[in-house]
Structure formats: C-alpha cells, structure tokens
Image 1 (cartoon, helix red, strand yellow):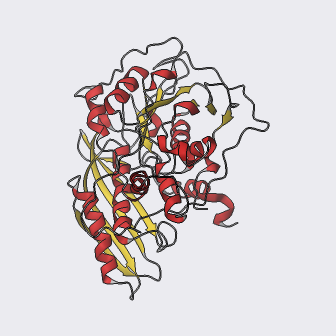
Image 2: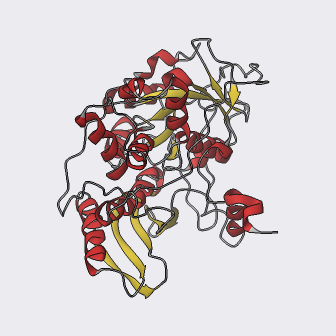
Length: 417
C-alpha cells in the first residue's frame, strides 16, 4: 500500500498515532506553560511546484503567504503570535535576490503583528522548500478548540469566501474575467496574494465573551432558528495596501490545487436532511466541552473553530467531526463576493466558496446570540452560514427551495494525496 492509496486524511491518522492524543488535532498544538497560559505551536511547509511556482508566484508574495498561513493557525486557536522560526531549503544555484525577496514578503506580513523571525535553519535541496514554525500565547480558558462545539450553535464565517480561488484563476488564465474592471481584478488577485490572518477578530470575540472569557454563554434565542439573522453582506473585496518591497505584478504565492469539479446538482441526492436542532447550549445530546487530558488544555469557553485555509466546507466538517455534532449549512447565506455574478455561474461561485480554499478566514461555532453580535461587530462579509445539529451528518441546504439538500464531504476540496 502506498500513501496515494490512503490519501492525506489517512496519512494524518497514521502520523497522529505517534503524538499525544490530547494535544494533536487542532490548528496548533497547545501546551500549558504556566497555570493560566499556554504555548500554541504550529508548523507549515511550502514546496516549490506544489504551493508556488514560477508560473504565478513571485518570491515576495510566496513569503507573505507563508507567514500568513502560520499566523492564521494561531488566530484559529485564539492565540497571540510571539515569534517564528524559518527552515529554508534551496538549491546551490538559487538566486540570492529570490531569497531576499521571499524574506521581505515574510517580514512585511509578520511586522503587521509585531512578530519577529527568531531563528531557523538553512540546508541544500534540489527543491526549494520552506518550513515555518510559529509560536503564540493563549490563555487556557480562551483556547479555541475544534472539539468545543455543541448542538444548536451557529456557524460563523468571518468574511467572504472564494475570492482567493478566483484570484488564482486570474493568474493562471489571464483571459478569464475579461469584463472585470482593473480595480476588481486587482482586488481578487490580492485576495490570493496577500491573505490577511484574522487576528483582528480575536479582540471582538473576547469583548463579546467578557474580560474573563465568559464561561457562561448567553441564553439562546430558541424557537425556530432563522438564518436571516446572519447579516450575510456581500461587498466586493477591497484590495489591501501594498506592503513594501518590490511588488511584482506577476507575484502571487499561489497555492495551485487542481481545479474543483462543478458543484453537484444532486442526482440521487436525498433531501431528507435532519430538522434544525431545538436544543441550545447544553442540550441533552450535546457533547461536553473539551476535557483536555494529561498535557492537554481544558477549554471551557463556549466557542469552537479553525481557519478556512483548506476551504469553508473542510473547516465545517473538521469541527463537526471533532465535536461529534452535525450541521445544516444554508447555501444562500454563504458570503460570496458580489463580483462573482459577473464572471462565473452560481454553481461555480458556490464551489469556489466551499472548496477553493486559501481565504484564511475563521470559521467559528458559538451560541446563536453571541454569533449574531459577532457578525454585527465584524461586518464586511461576516455571516452566520448554518447551525449545528444532534446528527453527525453535515448537510448543505437551500432555504430558497431551488436545490436539493446534499451531504458535504471532504473529498471535494484540495488534498495532497
């Protein structure tokens, strides 16, 4: 049997057997260092020809994206970044200018969050490879774990999805989107080249939950859960400001997953999705909040989450699996850039939003009252996209009644194997 036979998820299950079960499984490993503080640690690797290439990616943006991916993992855990180390593998004939531009891109991103590069390693390799390890700090009772979700909670996406995938398409196929204005084209490309780790969301979360993490969530509004409270605005993206260094117009730091297949229209898809859970936080069938374990972290805060670097659908599925809950996700509430209406079909827009990946937004599960307040405070595309259920099935529904309900699965998104 070969790695390709078991796929990325199968490989991860094997590797996790060699790690403490109470520590692995989230965006970061979290280890208690003092009675009230934990160290969050994450490592992310980029390989030439897999995560970036000369066809679309200049070194500056490759560096930016490498740093952003690690900071996004810290944000997903509720952690404040402290520092990073960088392991660089290059061929002997790699241009020094390439290395310098890569590090300029990294530091431009890191400096926005006062995060220094404090060390690393350099080795020779036939393939340019970069591995970054990021360190962050999080209060024990504010650690955001995938396993914290309960039935009856809302699912929040902190911003629009699919823009990065559209930016990659523009870089790979310049003839695509000929009817776009230069501003809109630049906005989508920059969404791919300069993703913003959503560390800015954390202060809003802590404000909502209170200065001490608000272990007791507010009462659910109960009754029929109305997705219309999502505030799912769909503004066009505004391009982020350029960040120093030489900005090359053909630089992207582009991940290059295979193009996603068109979104399925059903076929023999059953529409007997489970009803919305009437339970709220602490419902009869709700799983307990994470128990931690030896060396692990107990996290009593009423929130679960991860980032959407591998796609919105992937994040929702991973959190549901870790928390042993199901979900109903309403396709009409998923925040998608308005400009998509002019360049791709409705089905392609949804496919890119669910499976395109690399939007680096946060996907958070929390009590409905808190979710509504969070969406209101964040704005700019944040939306409640669904609700968790007692069932372990994860359904994509359509409140407009046009499309049949289908089950969301991991095999539609990008997998390395």
